[in-house]
Image (cartoon, helix red, strand yellow):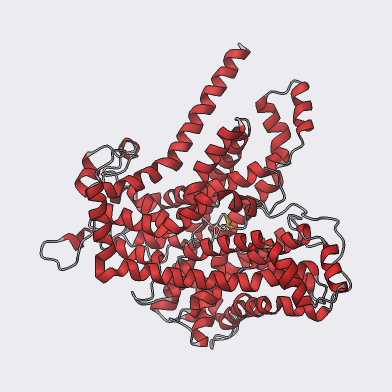
Length: 295
Length: 314
């Protein structure tokens, strides 16, 4: 009886696991197969059937040239905002984390506490106040309205603080100081070369957070030439026939997109982050756990 | 916002589980270092913190309070706005639904994965984690496809539920449920990774002695593992609650589909604040709503930092 019950529990557990896995995986598989098919094939063929490579190339060409190469413009904007923000985040966060971990100054604990509060607070809570401030400062519509907020990355400071607190031998730094090295040289020539993993980690997190951000560019940009991909994707929904049938009326001059085109745009938009997720998974996970748990 | 902002955070999801007393008990920073060096290293970050973290909050509070009609008028205007209460009702309903389902599923799945062989568990964690890469507008579009009965691979479920057309599926009554599904799809994987990491911190001896005492996998999960990861469950709940109140991306992008006529432009408080600022140039009321939302976020953050003992500040 007990054996049967255990067997039943195992079967139920396996069934739940399979259903949940389908929930997570099926939309991804569907998304990657959709651009290989025409809109008609999407409705008639199996969701998991592969269309053809020629359809895939055709879809790719149509979406990349759509609206005077809008997607390329959005891609370029996303790259400028994200790489600019990430570079600023690294330049600000790495020395700050080092300073908080390995130097002593009045207000250090207060700064650490404020950093934690801002880090935990949902970033979106600051978007509207930021919009009001950026507007007041006259930076609205400039690339700085996005690069500066993306570069303010308290999580990176905290990660660096934890890293320098727990991994750099203080005797090593003390020995350098006894040998006459100044504080900047200790940081530049000893701490920084040892901190490459944390620089990469802060870079990964800052990049993903900037690339995927929707709300901030939504309020800070107002023109197609400024939009990053996240906002561009929203614009594309308006041109997709199945979601906005009015645009599909006969004689309309609007170039109409179809589901496979939109799916292709989504794939292009998420590709950089997906690559980071796939190839830096271990690093990202270790960052999420902040080195405090054993895998 | 995108509620993906799980341990992110969501973003987002940036803030998964950060160190459990990392480096607890370590020595004080070296006394030989010059205090000016410390100021030098944190200078740029402090400038950014003041300009982009503190000043916007102070400015928003100032705007909200300095309305010409008198102190606090903006808040009164915001509370009296006929869209204010429904917007908060929407996000609270969404957050409640999302938190309950996420907690049950994340904890259940993590405990289940922890019983599997190491490599099998790792494969499942990876599969659950990957949708997090699609945070933002991308995930909403993916779910637009999934909710369209004519093309969705889940069409058989939609038809079974009686939804034959896309606009049936995204009817106003279904929105909280739909946003909860989107949020779970993006964020749950990250939390499972976090919980799994916490479970790995449980000493093997403890689990072995429970096994020797005759506890089966279910009892071990319920009486040993669950209490030991309780603080991370609380962390997830509190953080997700703060994130949930900030909902923005999902209703905004879903509303871009003309068929989503039921999604108003002020479905969530963040949308309402943006709507009154951009459509009516009423920055005072927008600031007041933003301040109310900020209070949620700040309160949660302060509780976690000073009461939660989850972070190392020495």
